[in-house]
Amino acid sequence: MAEAGILSRRDKLELIKGEILHMSPIGSRHQAIVDKMTRLFNRLVMDDAIVRVQGPIQIENWSEPEPDLILLKPQDDFYANHHPTPKEALLLIEVADSSLNFDKELKLPIYAEAGIEEYWIINLQDDQIEIHRSPEEGIYKNITIAKNNDFVSCLNFPSLSINVNDILG
View 1 (cartoon, rainbow, N blue to C red):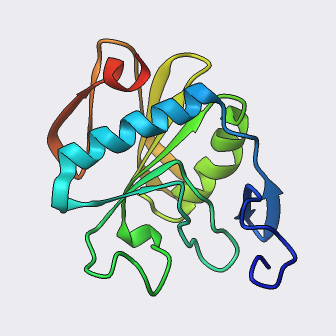
View 2: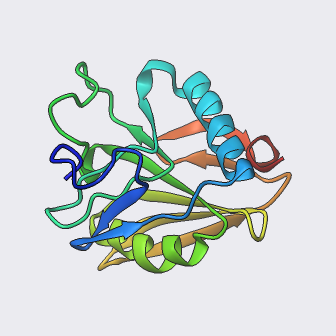
């Protein structure tokens, strides 16, 4: 629709279950945390993953959410010929302030149903990271809450230990 001139490329939209939804504007703290995580993950994973910022992931034909950050399996063409799919996602991260309910109630079940093995919600309202793992039958069976001074790691990069303060602080 952007190519046809119906929508602007600057419109903040996501395709969720066949509906085009307008997203909230990104606040300064939200953007700062996305920037911190981008720098942090680029440094930590180097060539072992592609760090994609606010880019789409194709979930079947009816959803194309744009998480704040995705760690993707490396691919020589950097996914030039298709949007990544759940099988190519190593970690999805959403930074949530005003979008917290949307990220928990709409996106979380979509990601679990798609079999995305790990989804983090950087919950700015409660200053914590909610780590969702082990999707089964549309829900995540393992949920961990990490707060300041806790350390977190990604399933696909277990040796990387990240202090929550480095993200939220």
